[in-house]
Length: 341
Image (cartoon, rainbow, N blue to C red; front, side, top):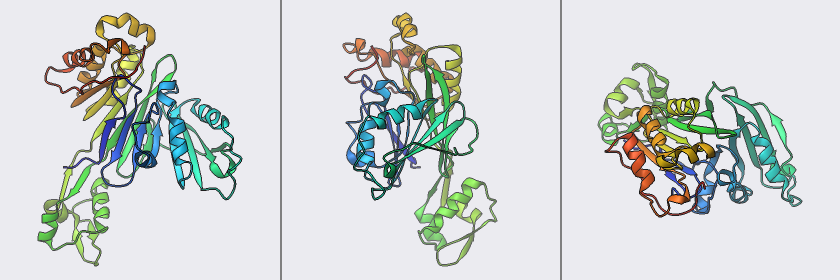
């Protein structure tokens, strides 16, 4: 079955952390962290509807300006989520520029900024038509640990500590419902928008007798569709964990967030022999990253955010993660760049 989302790291593991999640069906993408975004094309960045920022250290937030510049003249909102105090950081970024050419006739672009501290605690919007004057608005009433809840997926978050609150995230696809064209043909049913309601009914848990109306007005029981033309499987889970100290509570929270993930993107800044330095810098070692992945029972672990001190030994961090997780695990090949010192 096809995945709803396709995640990939924007940069090599020695460079700024940023995860781009492209939707397989639809003109939409998500970003996790806004470090160096230059490898992403204009087309890709214009598809970003939501960006989730772990914290505002420069290597996680410096790419905000490029994203803003490209989105500035598109209609519709760009949603940003970060830790407590994040809206102040966004406001400070916006205040650094002169917006005298923006007025009520400008494109209706809007920045929407949420803050999370275990649940959504505030929302602000910055409309381009008012030169990004800040407005406080009501935050959506979401359950604890959720920062986004949509029909096809949700995004969970936890607060970790890196000397400052640092968010980790997990994308959870709801039940994957794929259409089997041969099955539709055998039932004499056309492909069409009506299938969206069929998929939604499956995700809602409607019973087999639930009637689905196709585009010509014919009705069919949901159970018949499920038996002959729909393929249902658990949804994909993708977790993203960066910049966190190897404290007991951090490890426990990261493990819970990543539980059962198909892919875990996790920082492994320092080699195991540099554990003292990792503790001083409030980062994970490769071994701890691999142990979190093992405890969480993830299918694949992709380490990132390596310190440049290992540029001459690019295989060291992945090998230590592999040993801590499982000998047969596939580890992404490292490259060059810059990471935590």
